[in-house]
Amino acid sequence: MADLKQEVKPDEQQNYVIQNLLQQTQDKFQTMSDQITTRIDEMGTRVDDLEKNISDLMTQAGVEGADK
Image (cartoon, rainbow, N blue to C red; front, side):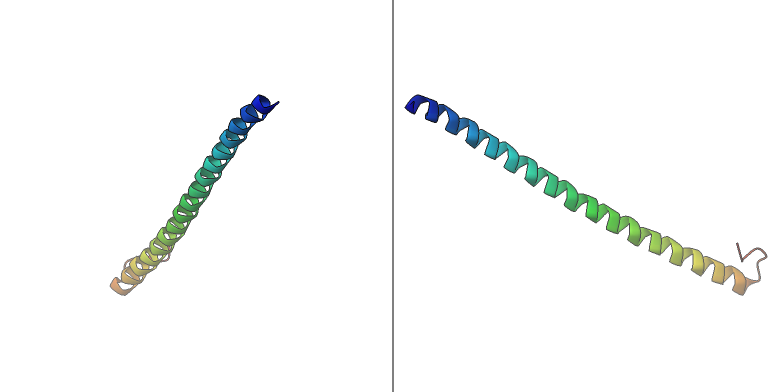
């Protein structure tokens, strides 16, 4: 019976280690995903600002089609 308990403990430890590793990996991927999403949102804002600035410059220069 003692041998059976010793055999079970390494399996439980292995399961714990694997679950812990998977959780850490999932957490890292979630963090990276959040960072990527934030950067994409920031880039979108910058593109919008750039488009507005270009439109304003075109309007100031009297270029037709500045309202596009």
